[in-house]
Image 1: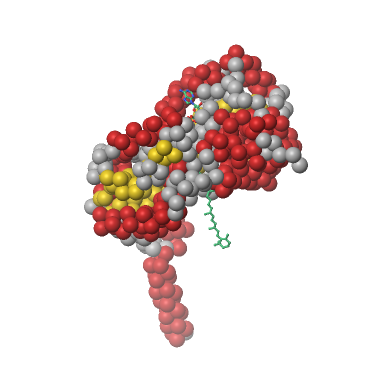
Image 2 (image 1 turned 90 degrees about the vertical axis):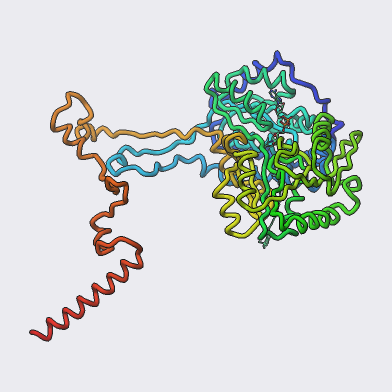
Length: 530
Ligand SMILES: NC(=O)c1ccc[n+]([C@@H]2O[C@H](COP(=O)([O-])OP(=O)(O)OC[C@H]3O[C@@H](n4cnc5c(N)ncnc54)[C@H](O)[C@@H]3O)[C@@H](O)[C@H]2O)c1
Ligand SMILES: CC1=C(/C=C/C(C)=C/C=C/C(C)=C/C=C/C=C(C)/C=C/C=C(C)/C=C/C=C(\C)C=O)C(C)(C)CCC1
């Protein structure tokens, strides 16, 4: 088999803005022609995309190397295999997902109307991808939209142009062009796309642009899923294992050179554990990169000069002390993983999302202080990490919010392809992955059907309203299981089972034991008397 090479592809060129409304109209027309509704159509498209990606694997790997210096290892694990497995999983489950769902919590009398929930595709959707995991962040939403029966336009990030080129090639070779289109470009092209009316917009990227997109979508009441970012804290309590914490936190800062939305933005460590943690970070860095970042050909590069410059000026602005790393080279876009011990939560490294291989560490007095700083820095980050005892971790989860969280590791909740993934508050809204990708592009349509023979039985709904009809309606009221003080009331049956008492089932059991014993004694006494 002759494998495709990136050189075989046309150069990255922006889609002419004047073509965008025609592209939009095409996918809208196709949706309204109901072309994409059948299960077989969707499966055929998904299976075709699978083989298109599979056959392009060498070029996909090459593109990620060109755009980000990404290793074949990371490219396979978190991009190519990720997307291939996503398609396989969706194909296996799609038929079950599409079946009408029985409606839950329906009173008996309403069951007669056969309530059910149909999964309707939302329509023609717009998907805007980001540069750091260009295939996973563009194709997985597209897989969800396709599975849901939508038509779609994908706008990959222009900051990963080679990945955008090969994605366009694979999509054009594998999917029906009437239903699935790619628009290439940056701000002007995305802005032109946002002028069109979509049935859903799925955006991955920074919160600033997320607000632009949410505002634009609000003008036409278009639903959005926003996969944004945040300043994700890692809290390392005094009960943590410093070696595990060091290795696992470094994982996400070496992965894609820290250009990972769910990587920790800063580390709050109990003051007593600071020496051990910093020591273990040095040990792990030595193990993970024995020849340093420069000598590690599997270590990604910063995506472009603009991002490199932003990171460099951020590092130069810190008042902290560099413990490890700090080597950078603009010519090769290399940025070494850099551990900085900072003395204040006001340090510039904690004020913005680095989205790079910076690891500021701040010592705290205790867990309460860590939680306070975390909530003060970013109340709704995309991710939260807690390393500590079971009680410590439970406290962190109970007293903070985040899109997702991993305990005693980094980014694991984001490493499971079928676990719903999304932000909260400023870090985003909506979620996807696995079945959630199907749901993300689906409208859950409630349907009922009233049989003719019921007409006389439910005429209480028609005027003229009589006393008899009103009495019938009054009897439909439910009985509350709580009293006027807001306390739960037990039903008569429950009162009897608990023998009138309150408290636990165990105490009720004790009462039953006493009650049965008394009954037995009484019965024996009655027998003697006879
Ligand atoms: N939640 C997630 O899954 C996820 C994944 C990756 C990145 N992110 C977040 O994204 C940010 C980094 O990515 P990025 O935004 O630099 O990626 P990016 O530069 O690739 O931009 C993302 C997309 O937004 C578009 N865009 C940029 N500026 C725009 C504008 N003014 N108007 C319209 N469209 C515009 C780009 O064309 C691109 O398609 C970080 O905050 C990171 O946390 C989140
Ligand atoms: C195999 C057996 C067992 C255990 C298996 C285990 C525990 C396997 C663990 C696998 C791991 C560690 C996989 C890690 C994968 C990481 C990935 C895919 C990272 C992905 C990163 C992503 C998606 C980043 C996203 C970034 C975003 C969205 C923003 O920028 C046993 C032990 C159970 C025994 C039986 C065999």
